[in-house]
Length: 252
Length: 149
Image (tube, rainbow over all chains, first blue to last red; front, side, top):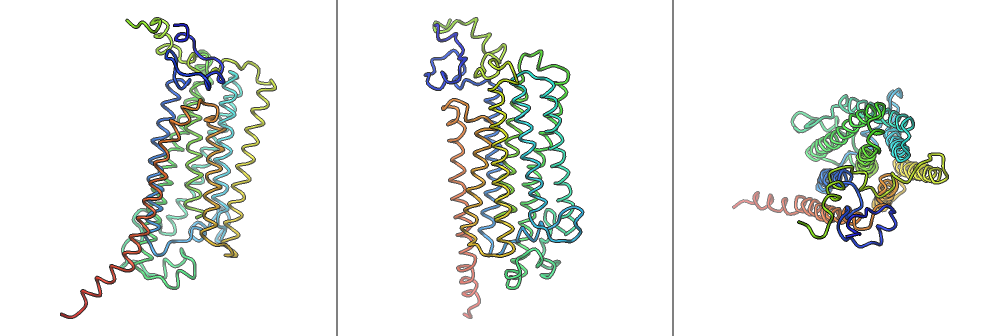
Protein backbone atom coordinates (compact mmCIF):
# COMPACT_ATOMS: atom_id res chain seq x y z
CA UNK A 1 0.00 0.00 0.00
CA UNK A 2 2.64 2.43 1.03
CA UNK A 3 4.75 1.66 -1.98
CA UNK A 4 1.84 2.03 -4.33
CA UNK A 5 1.32 5.66 -3.47
CA UNK A 6 4.94 6.73 -3.36
CA UNK A 7 6.35 8.13 -6.56
CA UNK A 8 10.06 7.66 -6.92
CA UNK A 9 11.81 10.94 -6.52
CA UNK A 10 15.41 9.82 -6.70
CA UNK A 11 16.38 8.35 -10.10
CA UNK A 12 19.04 6.14 -8.58
CA UNK A 13 16.39 4.44 -6.41
CA UNK A 14 14.43 3.61 -9.52
CA UNK A 15 17.30 1.70 -11.07
CA UNK A 16 17.54 -0.77 -8.23
CA UNK A 17 13.86 -0.93 -7.27
CA UNK A 18 11.59 -3.70 -8.51
CA UNK A 19 8.36 -2.35 -9.89
CA UNK A 20 5.51 -2.94 -7.52
CA UNK A 21 2.80 -0.95 -9.30
CA UNK A 22 1.45 2.43 -8.41
CA UNK A 23 3.86 4.48 -10.43
CA UNK A 24 5.13 4.51 -13.98
CA UNK A 25 7.21 1.34 -14.41
CA UNK A 26 9.62 3.24 -16.60
CA UNK A 27 9.62 6.15 -14.16
CA UNK A 28 8.76 8.41 -17.09
CA UNK A 29 5.67 10.36 -17.99
CA UNK A 30 3.25 8.97 -20.56
CA UNK A 31 4.11 11.67 -23.08
CA UNK A 32 7.83 11.01 -23.04
CA UNK A 33 7.40 7.24 -23.33
CA UNK A 34 5.08 7.70 -26.30
CA UNK A 35 7.54 10.08 -27.95
CA UNK A 36 10.27 7.44 -27.57
CA UNK A 37 8.00 4.74 -29.02
CA UNK A 38 7.11 7.00 -31.93
CA UNK A 39 10.81 7.57 -32.55
CA UNK A 40 11.42 3.81 -32.56
CA UNK A 41 8.77 3.40 -35.29
CA UNK A 42 10.26 6.34 -37.18
CA UNK A 43 13.68 4.70 -36.89
CA UNK A 44 12.20 1.65 -38.61
CA UNK A 45 10.85 3.83 -41.43
CA UNK A 46 14.20 5.50 -42.00
CA UNK A 47 15.95 2.16 -41.50
CA UNK A 48 13.78 0.58 -44.20
CA UNK A 49 14.58 3.45 -46.57
CA UNK A 50 18.32 3.26 -45.98
CA UNK A 51 18.40 -0.52 -46.12
CA UNK A 52 16.53 -0.59 -49.43
CA UNK A 53 19.01 2.01 -50.69
CA UNK A 54 21.85 -0.22 -49.52
CA UNK A 55 20.45 -3.40 -51.05
CA UNK A 56 19.87 -1.61 -54.37
CA UNK A 57 23.50 -0.56 -54.24
CA UNK A 58 24.60 -4.12 -53.65
CA UNK A 59 22.40 -5.13 -56.59
CA UNK A 60 24.03 -2.83 -59.16
CA UNK A 61 27.38 -3.23 -60.89
CA UNK A 62 28.18 0.49 -60.93
CA UNK A 63 27.20 3.34 -58.62
CA UNK A 64 27.68 7.13 -58.93
CA UNK A 65 30.53 8.56 -56.86
CA UNK A 66 28.98 10.95 -54.28
CA UNK A 67 32.12 13.10 -54.34
CA UNK A 68 31.46 13.78 -58.02
CA UNK A 69 27.67 14.17 -57.73
CA UNK A 70 27.73 16.54 -54.76
CA UNK A 71 30.73 18.59 -55.72
CA UNK A 72 29.31 22.11 -55.56
CA UNK A 73 29.15 24.71 -52.83
CA UNK A 74 27.33 28.08 -52.90
CA UNK A 75 29.27 31.07 -54.25
CA UNK A 76 32.11 28.82 -55.37
CA UNK A 77 31.20 28.62 -59.06
CA UNK A 78 32.21 25.35 -60.67
CA UNK A 79 35.17 24.62 -58.40
CA UNK A 80 34.83 20.97 -57.38
CA UNK A 81 34.51 20.94 -53.59
CA UNK A 82 33.23 17.52 -52.51
CA UNK A 83 31.99 17.09 -48.93
CA UNK A 84 32.50 20.77 -48.05
CA UNK A 85 28.91 21.94 -48.28
CA UNK A 86 27.42 18.83 -46.69
CA UNK A 87 29.86 19.06 -43.77
CA UNK A 88 28.61 22.60 -43.19
CA UNK A 89 25.04 21.25 -43.19
CA UNK A 90 26.07 18.51 -40.74
CA UNK A 91 27.72 21.00 -38.39
CA UNK A 92 24.63 23.24 -38.53
CA UNK A 93 22.44 20.31 -37.48
CA UNK A 94 24.83 19.22 -34.72
CA UNK A 95 24.95 22.77 -33.38
CA UNK A 96 21.16 23.05 -33.43
CA UNK A 97 21.06 19.80 -31.48
CA UNK A 98 23.38 21.34 -28.89
CA UNK A 99 21.23 24.49 -28.59
CA UNK A 100 18.20 22.19 -28.21
CA UNK A 101 19.78 20.26 -25.34
CA UNK A 102 20.66 23.63 -23.75
CA UNK A 103 16.98 24.62 -24.00
CA UNK A 104 15.98 21.36 -22.31
CA UNK A 105 18.60 22.02 -19.63
CA UNK A 106 17.26 25.55 -19.03
CA UNK A 107 13.76 24.03 -18.85
CA UNK A 108 14.87 21.79 -15.99
CA UNK A 109 15.66 24.98 -14.05
CA UNK A 110 12.42 26.73 -15.10
CA UNK A 111 14.46 29.52 -16.68
CA UNK A 112 12.03 31.02 -19.17
CA UNK A 113 14.42 33.57 -20.67
CA UNK A 114 17.13 30.99 -21.38
CA UNK A 115 14.66 28.47 -22.84
CA UNK A 116 13.41 31.22 -25.17
CA UNK A 117 16.95 32.12 -26.22
CA UNK A 118 18.06 28.54 -26.96
CA UNK A 119 14.81 27.72 -28.76
CA UNK A 120 15.32 30.69 -31.08
CA UNK A 121 18.87 29.48 -31.86
CA UNK A 122 17.54 25.98 -32.55
CA UNK A 123 14.85 27.29 -34.90
CA UNK A 124 17.46 29.37 -36.75
CA UNK A 125 19.63 26.23 -37.09
CA UNK A 126 16.70 24.27 -38.50
CA UNK A 127 15.84 27.00 -41.01
CA UNK A 128 19.51 27.27 -42.05
CA UNK A 129 19.66 23.53 -42.61
CA UNK A 130 16.48 23.61 -44.72
CA UNK A 131 17.89 26.49 -46.77
CA UNK A 132 21.08 24.49 -47.40
CA UNK A 133 18.99 21.54 -48.48
CA UNK A 134 16.97 23.72 -50.84
CA UNK A 135 20.22 24.90 -52.42
CA UNK A 136 21.47 21.33 -52.76
CA UNK A 137 18.23 20.12 -54.36
CA UNK A 138 18.18 23.07 -56.76
CA UNK A 139 21.79 22.38 -57.72
CA UNK A 140 21.12 18.68 -58.40
CA UNK A 141 17.92 19.49 -60.28
CA UNK A 142 20.01 21.84 -62.43
CA UNK A 143 22.19 18.85 -63.31
CA UNK A 144 19.12 16.91 -64.39
CA UNK A 145 18.66 14.88 -61.22
CA UNK A 146 15.09 14.33 -59.99
CA UNK A 147 12.69 11.49 -59.21
CA UNK A 148 12.68 9.23 -62.25
CA UNK A 149 15.34 11.17 -64.15
CA UNK A 150 17.69 9.36 -66.58
CA UNK A 151 15.28 6.42 -66.54
CA UNK A 152 15.03 5.82 -70.29
CA UNK A 153 18.25 4.57 -71.97
CA UNK A 154 16.92 5.64 -75.38
CA UNK A 155 16.80 9.29 -74.33
CA UNK A 156 20.02 9.48 -72.34
CA UNK A 157 23.55 9.36 -73.68
CA UNK A 158 26.34 7.63 -71.80
CA UNK A 159 28.44 10.76 -72.10
CA UNK A 160 25.85 12.79 -70.14
CA UNK A 161 26.11 10.40 -67.18
CA UNK A 162 29.83 9.79 -67.08
CA UNK A 163 30.62 12.82 -64.93
CA UNK A 164 28.67 11.21 -62.04
CA UNK A 165 31.04 8.22 -61.97
CA UNK A 166 34.67 7.64 -61.14
CA UNK A 167 36.71 7.84 -64.40
CA UNK A 168 37.80 4.21 -64.04
CA UNK A 169 34.15 3.09 -63.67
CA UNK A 170 32.83 5.46 -66.31
CA UNK A 171 35.23 4.08 -68.91
CA UNK A 172 33.92 0.53 -68.77
CA UNK A 173 30.21 0.77 -67.88
CA UNK A 174 27.33 0.19 -70.29
CA UNK A 175 24.50 2.67 -70.85
CA UNK A 176 21.97 0.31 -69.23
CA UNK A 177 24.11 0.00 -66.10
CA UNK A 178 24.65 3.77 -65.93
CA UNK A 179 20.97 4.72 -66.31
CA UNK A 180 19.84 2.09 -63.80
CA UNK A 181 22.36 3.23 -61.19
CA UNK A 182 21.86 6.97 -61.74
CA UNK A 183 18.06 6.72 -61.69
CA UNK A 184 18.12 4.68 -58.48
CA UNK A 185 20.66 6.97 -56.89
CA UNK A 186 18.56 10.09 -57.46
CA UNK A 187 15.27 8.38 -56.55
CA UNK A 188 16.71 7.27 -53.22
CA UNK A 189 18.50 10.56 -52.61
CA UNK A 190 15.44 12.74 -53.12
CA UNK A 191 13.11 10.37 -51.26
CA UNK A 192 15.31 9.94 -48.21
CA UNK A 193 16.61 13.50 -47.87
CA UNK A 194 13.09 14.72 -48.71
CA UNK A 195 11.61 12.60 -45.94
CA UNK A 196 14.31 13.81 -43.58
CA UNK A 197 13.78 17.43 -44.65
CA UNK A 198 10.07 17.01 -43.96
CA UNK A 199 11.00 15.91 -40.44
CA UNK A 200 13.21 18.97 -40.00
CA UNK A 201 10.36 21.17 -41.24
CA UNK A 202 7.88 19.58 -38.80
CA UNK A 203 10.50 20.05 -36.08
CA UNK A 204 10.80 23.76 -36.88
CA UNK A 205 6.98 24.08 -36.72
CA UNK A 206 6.83 22.24 -33.35
CA UNK A 207 9.69 24.36 -32.00
CA UNK A 208 7.89 27.53 -33.09
CA UNK A 209 4.77 26.46 -31.21
CA UNK A 210 6.92 25.65 -28.17
CA UNK A 211 8.59 29.04 -28.46
CA UNK A 212 5.23 30.85 -28.49
CA UNK A 213 4.09 28.83 -25.47
CA UNK A 214 7.33 29.54 -23.64
CA UNK A 215 7.11 33.28 -24.28
CA UNK A 216 3.46 33.27 -23.20
CA UNK A 217 4.44 31.49 -19.98
CA UNK A 218 2.26 28.44 -20.65
CA UNK A 219 4.92 26.01 -19.40
CA UNK A 220 5.77 28.18 -16.42
CA UNK A 221 2.11 28.11 -15.31
CA UNK A 222 2.03 24.37 -15.97
CA UNK A 223 4.94 23.97 -13.57
CA UNK A 224 7.29 22.14 -15.92
CA UNK A 225 8.88 22.34 -19.35
CA UNK A 226 8.27 18.73 -20.34
CA UNK A 227 7.01 19.78 -23.77
CA UNK A 228 10.49 21.14 -24.52
CA UNK A 229 11.97 17.77 -23.54
CA UNK A 230 9.59 15.88 -25.84
CA UNK A 231 10.24 18.16 -28.81
CA UNK A 232 13.94 17.94 -27.92
CA UNK A 233 13.81 14.15 -28.23
CA UNK A 234 12.25 14.51 -31.67
CA UNK A 235 14.83 17.10 -32.73
CA UNK A 236 17.78 14.96 -31.62
CA UNK A 237 16.31 12.03 -33.51
CA UNK A 238 16.21 14.13 -36.67
CA UNK A 239 19.88 14.98 -36.09
CA UNK A 240 20.59 11.28 -35.51
CA UNK A 241 18.96 10.30 -38.80
CA UNK A 242 21.07 12.91 -40.60
CA UNK A 243 24.21 11.31 -39.15
CA UNK A 244 23.23 8.08 -40.91
CA UNK A 245 22.09 9.81 -44.13
CA UNK A 246 25.42 11.66 -44.21
CA UNK A 247 27.37 8.40 -43.96
CA UNK A 248 25.22 6.44 -46.39
CA UNK A 249 24.97 9.05 -49.14
CA UNK A 250 28.09 11.15 -48.87
CA UNK A 251 30.84 9.04 -47.35
CA UNK A 252 30.33 5.42 -48.35
CA UNK B 1 -12.60 -2.11 -6.05
CA UNK B 2 -8.89 -2.41 -6.12
CA UNK B 3 -7.45 -3.66 -2.89
CA UNK B 4 -3.92 -3.00 -3.96
CA UNK B 5 -3.99 0.69 -4.54
CA UNK B 6 -5.37 3.84 -3.11
CA UNK B 7 -7.60 4.64 -6.06
CA UNK B 8 -8.05 8.34 -5.39
CA UNK B 9 -4.33 8.91 -5.45
CA UNK B 10 -3.96 6.77 -8.56
CA UNK B 11 -6.38 8.92 -10.53
CA UNK B 12 -4.44 11.99 -9.52
CA UNK B 13 -1.20 10.33 -10.48
CA UNK B 14 -2.20 9.09 -13.92
CA UNK B 15 -4.78 11.56 -15.17
CA UNK B 16 -3.73 14.67 -13.39
CA UNK B 17 -0.41 16.37 -13.24
CA UNK B 18 2.06 14.31 -15.21
CA UNK B 19 4.97 16.02 -13.52
CA UNK B 20 4.48 13.62 -10.60
CA UNK B 21 5.62 10.83 -12.89
CA UNK B 22 8.96 12.42 -13.66
CA UNK B 23 12.17 10.81 -12.66
CA UNK B 24 12.57 13.73 -10.32
CA UNK B 25 14.98 15.51 -12.61
CA UNK B 26 12.68 18.48 -13.03
CA UNK B 27 11.71 18.95 -9.42
CA UNK B 28 15.13 18.94 -7.88
CA UNK B 29 16.83 21.67 -9.81
CA UNK B 30 16.56 25.19 -8.55
CA UNK B 31 19.62 27.22 -9.41
CA UNK B 32 20.88 27.34 -12.99
CA UNK B 33 24.17 28.83 -11.79
CA UNK B 34 24.81 25.91 -9.42
CA UNK B 35 27.80 23.60 -9.76
CA UNK B 36 25.52 20.73 -10.82
CA UNK B 37 24.14 22.79 -13.68
CA UNK B 38 27.60 23.87 -14.80
CA UNK B 39 28.83 20.27 -14.80
CA UNK B 40 25.95 19.26 -17.06
CA UNK B 41 26.61 22.16 -19.45
CA UNK B 42 30.30 21.21 -19.57
CA UNK B 43 29.29 17.64 -20.43
CA UNK B 44 27.07 18.90 -23.28
CA UNK B 45 29.89 21.04 -24.65
CA UNK B 46 32.31 18.11 -24.38
CA UNK B 47 29.96 15.89 -26.39
CA UNK B 48 29.56 18.66 -28.97
CA UNK B 49 33.35 18.77 -29.36
CA UNK B 50 33.51 14.96 -29.71
CA UNK B 51 30.82 15.07 -32.41
CA UNK B 52 32.66 17.83 -34.26
CA UNK B 53 35.97 15.93 -34.06
CA UNK B 54 34.45 12.68 -35.35
CA UNK B 55 32.66 14.49 -38.20
CA UNK B 56 35.86 16.33 -39.15
CA UNK B 57 37.75 13.03 -39.14
CA UNK B 58 35.12 11.49 -41.41
CA UNK B 59 35.32 14.40 -43.83
CA UNK B 60 39.14 14.34 -43.78
CA UNK B 61 39.24 10.60 -44.48
CA UNK B 62 36.62 10.99 -47.23
CA UNK B 63 38.53 13.81 -48.95
CA UNK B 64 41.84 12.01 -48.53
CA UNK B 65 40.39 8.91 -50.15
CA UNK B 66 38.79 10.95 -52.93
CA UNK B 67 42.06 12.68 -53.90
CA UNK B 68 44.63 9.98 -53.19
CA UNK B 69 42.66 6.70 -53.41
CA UNK B 70 45.08 5.05 -51.00
CA UNK B 71 42.52 3.24 -48.85
CA UNK B 72 40.92 -0.15 -49.11
CA UNK B 73 37.26 0.78 -49.70
CA UNK B 74 35.91 -1.98 -47.47
CA UNK B 75 38.06 -1.03 -44.49
CA UNK B 76 37.31 2.67 -45.01
CA UNK B 77 33.55 1.99 -45.07
CA UNK B 78 33.86 -0.05 -41.88
CA UNK B 79 35.66 2.88 -40.23
CA UNK B 80 32.89 5.26 -41.40
CA UNK B 81 30.22 2.94 -39.97
CA UNK B 82 31.99 2.68 -36.61
CA UNK B 83 32.32 6.48 -36.45
CA UNK B 84 28.62 6.85 -37.33
CA UNK B 85 27.59 4.44 -34.60
CA UNK B 86 29.84 6.28 -32.15
CA UNK B 87 28.13 9.59 -33.01
CA UNK B 88 24.70 7.93 -32.71
CA UNK B 89 25.66 6.58 -29.28
CA UNK B 90 26.79 10.02 -28.07
CA UNK B 91 23.60 11.72 -29.28
CA UNK B 92 21.25 9.10 -27.82
CA UNK B 93 23.12 8.68 -24.55
CA UNK B 94 23.74 12.31 -23.65
CA UNK B 95 21.54 14.60 -25.77
CA UNK B 96 18.47 12.38 -25.55
CA UNK B 97 19.32 11.42 -21.94
CA UNK B 98 18.64 7.74 -22.59
CA UNK B 99 21.63 6.91 -20.41
CA UNK B 100 19.80 8.48 -17.46
CA UNK B 101 16.66 6.34 -17.85
CA UNK B 102 16.08 3.11 -15.99
CA UNK B 103 17.49 -0.07 -17.48
CA UNK B 104 14.12 -1.59 -18.45
CA UNK B 105 13.30 1.45 -20.53
CA UNK B 106 16.68 1.47 -22.27
CA UNK B 107 16.11 -2.17 -23.22
CA UNK B 108 12.53 -1.48 -24.36
CA UNK B 109 13.95 1.05 -26.83
CA UNK B 110 17.12 -0.74 -27.94
CA UNK B 111 16.02 -4.38 -28.28
CA UNK B 112 13.40 -3.74 -31.02
CA UNK B 113 16.09 -1.89 -33.00
CA UNK B 114 18.05 -5.16 -33.24
CA UNK B 115 15.51 -6.06 -35.91
CA UNK B 116 17.32 -3.58 -38.16
CA UNK B 117 20.56 -5.52 -37.75
CA UNK B 118 18.86 -8.58 -39.19
CA UNK B 119 17.32 -6.49 -41.97
CA UNK B 120 20.68 -5.00 -42.98
CA UNK B 121 22.35 -8.41 -43.19
CA UNK B 122 19.40 -10.04 -44.98
CA UNK B 123 18.81 -7.33 -47.58
CA UNK B 124 22.47 -6.63 -48.30
CA UNK B 125 22.98 -10.36 -48.80
CA UNK B 126 19.91 -10.53 -51.02
CA UNK B 127 21.08 -7.61 -53.17
CA UNK B 128 24.49 -9.19 -53.50
CA UNK B 129 22.95 -12.52 -54.51
CA UNK B 130 20.66 -10.92 -57.10
CA UNK B 131 23.59 -9.12 -58.65
CA UNK B 132 25.47 -12.39 -58.84
CA UNK B 133 22.49 -14.06 -60.54
CA UNK B 134 22.11 -11.16 -62.96
CA UNK B 135 25.75 -11.24 -63.91
CA UNK B 136 26.05 -15.00 -64.29
CA UNK B 137 22.95 -17.11 -64.50
CA UNK B 138 20.83 -14.65 -66.47
CA UNK B 139 23.53 -14.60 -69.10
CA UNK B 140 23.59 -18.39 -69.23
CA UNK B 141 19.85 -18.51 -69.86
CA UNK B 142 20.23 -15.92 -72.61
CA UNK B 143 22.97 -17.96 -74.21
CA UNK B 144 20.83 -21.08 -74.12
CA UNK B 145 17.98 -19.22 -75.77
CA UNK B 146 20.28 -18.08 -78.55
CA UNK B 147 21.43 -21.60 -79.29
CA UNK B 148 20.02 -22.91 -82.58
CA UNK B 149 17.64 -25.83 -82.23
